[in-house]
Image (cartoon, rainbow, N blue to C red; front, side):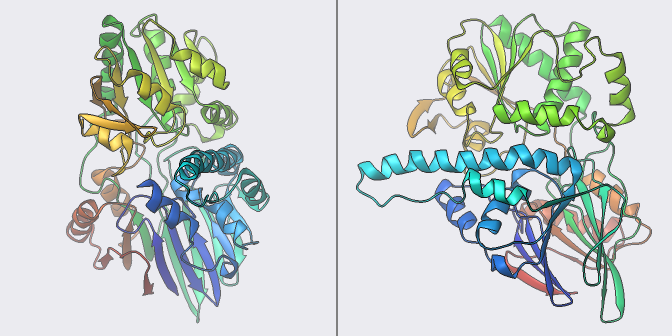
Length: 466
């Protein structure tokens, strides 16, 4: 068996790991790389392997950096099954179509600039129609139900607790008379967060592909960040300003709404309007409502006791789909909260809200998630005095507040505890989905504290034989 780490190797985006077993090729995740616009476009357009040579795909979850290049894979000639959990499949029905539309819009904007310069127009990486074709190849499986997917390969999904439908990929692989369990963590969830169940255990893992996004740090308690969320909103409202929250439409937005729902019913939220301004978030929140089987017991109890019987809605909250209503938010004079995508501020409606607030000291830009290098979100976190939005320069005068306690990823202690809970230490661990310092720190801890003898940090496109 060989594994080639084509994406999320010494970085946190573009998850793609290709397994070759019994003469077949199985791709774990097919995510979009996120970073500098031109570099990201080229990396995503050019797959590092022949699409027609892939026999099957297994998705750990629906986040775009794990699933977003599926339409390009299908466009390139892949016609096999794409296995995922049923909730992941429902999310992808909204997310991939939205991604295709964004690809088309992005190219329209780029080509207008290229036309003015006399340059040749470019094509989108894929279109909404390509995304629709990819959706037809999805095969939804329940948790904990083994399924033979290739000769000598049986798949089972376990709950990863990271986002709705997220899964540990557990592969029973028989090759050359030898049987081993290969486990891919995808993004491992954070125990104790509201909404979703805690990460399950695969029991045993002979070969483990483990994420290490936060392998060198510990998350602050969620309770502190939730309290700080309320304080930021109250302080900004007293200044007469808006709170602009860039947030991924999937998982982060729903967690924020859940927490705001709690603050509202506790009387800790000022009487100001709250808007979720993202068509995708509107659709995704409905998918969340449709899958209460993924919720933890505390959230189910909260749902039964909620005055509105909806943990994703309260009287001051409005979901916005229409572009005209989104533009109208920029004309609001009083305080409000606007949650909008994208989470790293690289596309979507959030850029319009930032453009209209970034130079006014009354407003607050509230960052609630990790920001990749070379993104607008990272430049805001770094409080660079001048930022570019839609190609124009703006002086950063708004308040920028970063709250790190909302992450859905396990931190260093969570990762170590999850590995220590396995029946025995894995024979080999490959650390993926993390920056080099975080992975190096986690590798040392796994050797010293979890008894793992062989821990490797694969380089991009490195192939290993197991």
